[in-house]
Length: 333
Ligand code: SAM
Ligand code: SF4
Image (spheres, rainbow, N blue to C red):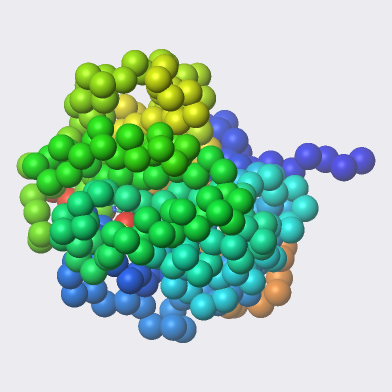
């Protein structure tokens, strides 16, 4: 008899969603994510494409139904399209998603779609080229918009924009970004900045803009209809009476705790399985794979044991001490 294989943590939460960081590198240096002068990991310290595939394969065989590839910028990793092709065909996987800054989508959207990637999230914090450059430090807005359009032309649907809102920087563009999403039939999520990594560009407490504030601004222009849809994660979604094709999400690690229904774990590019975005509980899967190459059983045991380390909740606080020193690009946001 084929017993259904699942991963469950010690609070009886089913874990069936894996986010994998495939690189810590990026062609942007967003002010909330990275320092201007970043030190990236040496090659031997990061998982090879084969090791990334092996982790994905084990998770899917243990009941994982959704994988998201992220980074850093996943599209700057050499061989990413082949990796997607291999993961997308794992039997039992329902969705292979990818989060990108959009800069490489002009050339890679079609190959990714053909490789079997089901959905994209694309980050977009501003429609003003000057502010866009200031927030990303190196990014070109035109290139990202061309990437968003290339994704649609390639066949991607239900693409979602991600926008981190910083008070006094891009909060005056919230409604324009919603209109941009509506025009292109995209979903959009507004994200509260999280205290991950030491940054010196701004004081996180001062830039904090709550999801309730963002929602109130949108409600001045649109009728928000509460939607039951949720990803069992930090996002809550609303529909717009004026534009039924666009969903607006709010990712609120500060103001709305989402831990009780958390179904996800994260793999850093160094092969550390993080059980919670806001805690350091982890299991070193790279060490297992390098000590016992090709031993699927040992890898599986390590993954199962790791589930028992998953903490109940995170404790982010606005403007407080940085509790988590690792950067978002290391974590796989
Ligand atoms: N490079 C890709 C991108 O920007 O979409 C994928 C990786 S990035 C770390 C994933 C998401 O995390 C992006 O939407 C980014 O805006 C968000 N992010 C990065 N640092 C953050 C922080 N400190 N607080 C909240 N969101 C953050
Ligand atoms: Fe790069 Fe994404 Fe971080 Fe921006 S948010 S620096 S695009 S990894």
